[in-house]
Amino acid sequence: MPWLKRLIAVLCLLVLAALALSLHYYLPRHEVVRVTGVEVKRMDADGVINAENPADGPTRDVYFINTVTNDATRDVTVYRNEDTGWGFPWYFKFDSADLQAKAQDYSRDANQLAVIRYYGWRFQMFSMFPNVTDIKATNTASTPFPVFNTLFFAVLLLIVLGIVLAVRNRLRRRHRPMAPDMPPR
Image 1: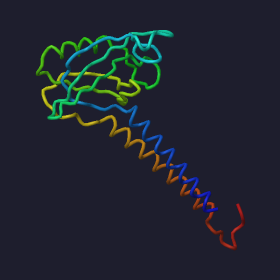
Image 2 (image 1 turned 120 degrees about the vertical axis):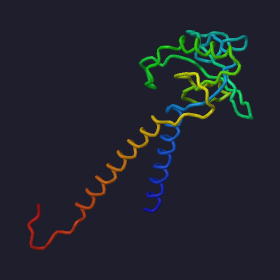
Image 3 (image 1 turned 90 degrees about the horizontal axis):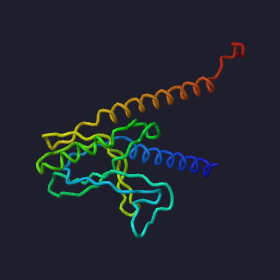
Image 4 (image 1 turned 60 degrees about the vertical axis):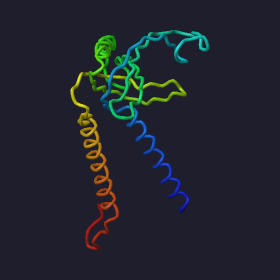
């Protein structure tokens, strides 16, 4: 039976790792950047349409925001700016054109810093871009405190603690020895 306990432990770790990766992908993050440009590209399910990847299904226009970090490394990042609509993840974002206009305005001033709120990862090999959910002008280079993520994890921790305590109390009641003179329940 020790192999069964190990198997259950490994499965639990895999589920926790999948949950952690999902949370890292879908929870919002912030970055202070300088917007260097904006563009619109025609895409289909396979990615950007070009000579190597012709359109083979329904297409859509996707906005992109080009940025550079404000630190010494000056890392370049490209963000996707697409509506999430009513679907998952539930950001209920319907203003991608307005965000694109803001980003274009910020790109005209080389000294203007912007705080971008986004979710997702950048994988160049798969042409995956993080999706911008908000952009605002800022005067400071410090990244804002992630209030939503902190509250989310606090509530999640309380729920997990509640479940653990409920299971623990239930197991204690089940395994509590009965007094010999008490009738069974």
